[in-house]
Length: 296
Ligand SMILES: NC(=O)C1=CN([C@@H]2O[C@H](COP(=O)(O)OP(=O)(O)OC[C@H]3O[C@@H](n4cnc5c(N)ncnc54)[C@H](OP(=O)(O)O)[C@@H]3O)[C@@H](O)[C@H]2O)C=CC1
Ligand SMILES: O=C(O)C(=O)[C@@H](O)[C@H](O)C(=O)CO
Image 1 (cartoon, rainbow, N blue to C red):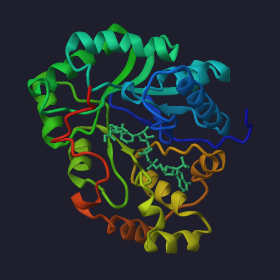
Image 2: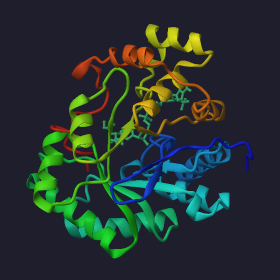
Image 3: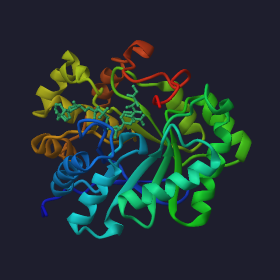
């Protein structure tokens, strides 16, 4: 294991637990979403490299079909459990309360863990399951009460979705993970999450398709700091208080994305990146209000 691991700051969540502010995303680290032995092997290799590079916070999901490979990498690493922070997400086919409880057990089994740090409802799916994501949320809070889940949260929840589950249960999620990068700053979800005391976690923090990495403003700021555009974007997130989970399958980029704690952006630089927002046209992933979930 590397001995020059950067110190990664932690953010305190509303339930008193803490989350490392920078983690490692695992979407499509393997060729497809099948839970096959080959995919597990490829995922285990990539996540093993990320752990070796110094990541201790890993983001996976039932939908990704790679929890088994993440579990294999964790087991092979020998890293003590309490030094790791593992997130998974409820699959689109598991929204009914009984399925929440059942599929959570399967997630723990695939990961080889006896507790999970963070479990998120992956998508609100307002057009599915009679739009009853409040019952799904209630089942998530029961997992915490049962003691095998440290923190329950949501993903891709817009303000109306957040307000609805809080009104129905009186319990706010600890985290909302949603698409957030310089071309899509999603101020509505940021403001609603902040108002409800929910930590903001940016998925697709580099823009997913790489376009913000080539932006002229970000390139200029990168030159001024002697950093890469990826490092500037990640630093912008960190200084705005977001948790970030960049994905890379390449060891050199894994290390690059971790080397973001030795410089600071100025307030002017942050404002000029904020101004790159393209509102809805900057979104690269699905719209949570209409996304129906993964096909059967
Ligand atoms: N909750 C949700 O609905 C969603 C959650 N997520 C989570 O967020 C994570 C991150 O988002 P993701 O969509 O993967 O996209 P990112 O914004 O992390 O971008 C990943 C892309 O950027 C490339 N990249 C990474 N680092 C660098 C670098 N330093 N320089 C140049 N290119 C780089 C990667 O290529 P390469 O691998 O070749 O280096 C990959 O093509 C996911 O892996 C997943 O865990 C993502 C989408 C939706
Ligand atoms: O990456 C995720 O977490 C997602 O939810 C996306 O992959 C999503 O399933 C998608 O890309 C749909 O087109």
